[in-house]
Structure formats: C-alpha cells, structure tokens
Length: 274
Image (cartoon, rainbow, N blue to C red):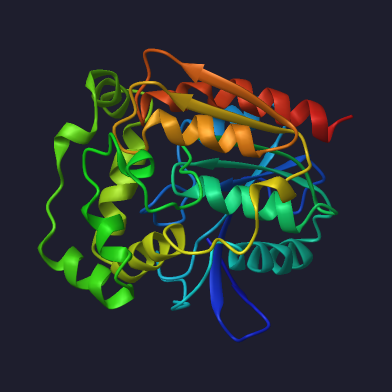
C-alpha cells in the first residue's frame, strides 16, 4: 500500500497490482466496509487479462484520513489527484456494492479520464420511499444515517451482523472464491467505524451528481435475490443511466453476483484497448 497526500493535506492509501507499468488500468472501488487492500480473485483476474488494478481507500477506512461530511462525488476528486500522481491518464472503473456509487461518480465527473464503468449490487440514489427500502434485510445503518453522522456512529456501537442478509449462494461464495472479501470486511470493522458512517450518510444524502451525467458506456449487474441492496435498486439505476447495459442474474444474491467480475473486466479491457 502506498500513502499519497492530497491537496487538502489528507492522506489516502493506494493499492496497485502493477505500479510503474503502461498496462490498461482499471480502478476497483471497494465495497463497504473495506481496508483498501486488493485481494483475490480480483488480482488474479486482472493479471490474467494484462490489466493494472488500482484501488484508493476511501476516507476513514484502513488508515486513510477521515473526511466528515463527504459526498459520493468527493471520491472523484480524490481519484483524479491519485491518477495524476500515478501518471495514469485513462482508466475504467469497477465498483461493488458501496463502491458502486463512487465508481459512477468518477465516470460522471471525470469523463476525460474514465472510459467506461461497471457496477455490481449498487444502490440507487436515495429516495425516502418504501420502494427504496423494501427488501433490505438489514437496513439499520442506513436508517440511522438519515439522522446524521453521529447517529450512524452511535448505531454502530451496538449493531450486530445479521446473517439473514445473505442467501445460500452468497455464503457459498464467501466460503469459496470470495473468501478474501469476507476477511477484508471483517478486518475493516475495528478501524472503519467512521468510514462506514460516512459512506452510509453519503448514500442517503445528495450524491453530488445525477446518474444522467454518466455518459460513458456503463454496465449494471444485479442479483435478483440480493437482500442487502434489493434488485429494485439495480433496475432503477439502470433506467436512469443514458448509456447502460443491464444484467440481472436470477439466482445471485449480494456476494454471489461478483461471479460476473471476470466478464466485466473483459468488457472494460476491450474499451481501454479500443
């Protein structure tokens, strides 16, 4: 992990599978929570395709400085500064779950740097309606976040994990190919309370951009059995994006949908090499 100082004096952490190379570059936007470290099978899938995979730790996670009050859009500003330091002019972005809105922010606000985007299990922009909330098995963190940062931090002090939010295929994925994701989320828990709070507050307030501003080719993938971010989010998000392909995976839940990552990397690589 490399520490990079931004213009406002904050430090972010950057993981990079192929530093100082000219490979086509994909930026992975981590789920919530995360430590910022890239893990399998992301790394091997990128390497097999001749791609450089880069990840920027969001504020408040993994030792990255906090940014209370941050919006989803603020991540795009951080990313552009990181790309300048790395000397990377053009990238594609890929985001899972809570990383999805941040990937879309980069695509919307950095069209001169981002060639294509793909998101999996991504929430839609917030609307305090039954349609937005329906089907979430564990919505306590987001509901607390609607009352602000301190309320979300206070909620986390007594929150417990609800295993019902994952379906059988999710547990199989966490026991198999995506075991490292589960370990990373667990490792992030002790030090990522502020990052998690700031993520959730950002998700339930103005993102700082509209999905209609994402004009680059975009793929939205969602599992029909997702109980963390219900499939209605994927459908609504896809309907709001102007240059989108939508894939709904009938048997996948929130974690199992990540089986689509290798195919998405193929698609992003094709754009970067075109």
